[in-house]
Structures are given as structure tokens and as C-alpha cells.
Image (tube, rainbow, N blue to C red; front, side):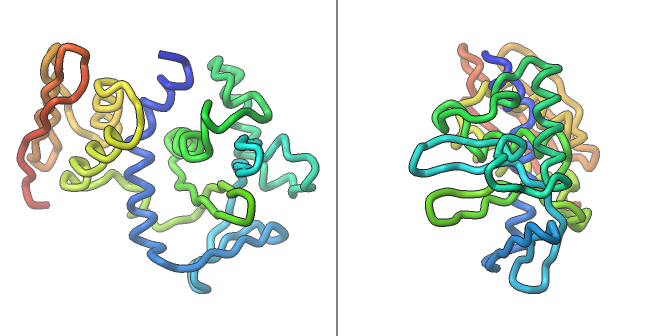
Length: 221
């Protein structure tokens, strides 16, 4: 497993859970981005400071980090997060965080933004525009958006992550449960997670370490 894939596996599930909570908050509201003020507005009433991550180009099928987008004259205060990600990549040997641009089939905006979310505790938004999409993180969200997910949603998050992304199942499961405050017991064929509220998750793994069955019980909160 590459350094990028390992980092992604460590953070994707918790970050994905935050994205579901963000979707609950924003719903179907339209979005607007004001780079002068450094804020994103959703539906006119939700307004949050932002940090730019980067952009996807649909014409070239490439990613460009915000810190490397010198041609757009982006306000310096809005690229601090992308610069922090570059420095983190340098320290940990994750090339995708340090190279200015690369093809989307190597790492797309969603995977990069999920890693950033996992590392910082923020949520991200993908803003489509003609010819591409801009990815930015939101600051100052209500605490329930970034809080640990409920046991019911933990089952949903795990299932959707495993179905959506090619990841190491055991790595994702172990990291997710620990980050969400569950205790974890492991054997080669089974991972058992126990929530402080009494819920339990039992995950059977096959010989390749892939999830074959998820069961358990959810105690009412």
C-alpha cells in the first residue's frame, strides 16, 4: 500500500461521516463563493469562512493545488490550508500532497479533500463550475457536524466507504472505530467494536482481509 493509500485509509471514514452531516445541514441549497471576503454562502442564510484546497479541470483531467494556482491571484490567506497540506506531505513522504498538479486518476479532489478533512477536523465542499470544480474547506460549522457519528450512522458510513473507494478494509475499520471513540478487539478473522453507549459492531473478514459480513446491535442513545 502506497503512502497516499495508507493515509487515505486512516482518514476516509471519519471524514466521510462529517460529509454526511454537512449534507444534512446544507440540503439542496445553492452555493456562492466570495474570494474577496473568503466566505461561502449556502441558500443565503448559511455563511462560513473558507480555505481553498484546489481545483479539478475536466478538460485536462488534472488536479491543481491552490498553493500552486499562481495564475488566479488567489488571496494569500485563503491558501494556508493547502500550504499546510504540502508541508505535511513533505514531512510524511506523501508525494500527492507536495506535487503541484497530477492526473485525476492518480488522486482526485474528493480523495484529497477527505484526507484534508481527516487531518484537520473540517468538512469540504465541491463547487462545480463550467469546465471543472473547486474544492474548499469550511470553518465555523455547528459542532454537531464535526462531532463523532451516531452508532446507527457508523454502520452506514462503513458500508458506503467500502463500496465507494478501493481501500484496505481492516485499516479503514480500525482507524474509524478508534477515531469515533469505540473500543476495538481484533483477530485475523474478526473485528469487534464497542461504543461507550452500549452498541456493538461485529465485522467478519475473509482471508484477504476484506469485509465479508457486518452485524451487531445499536442501543438507543
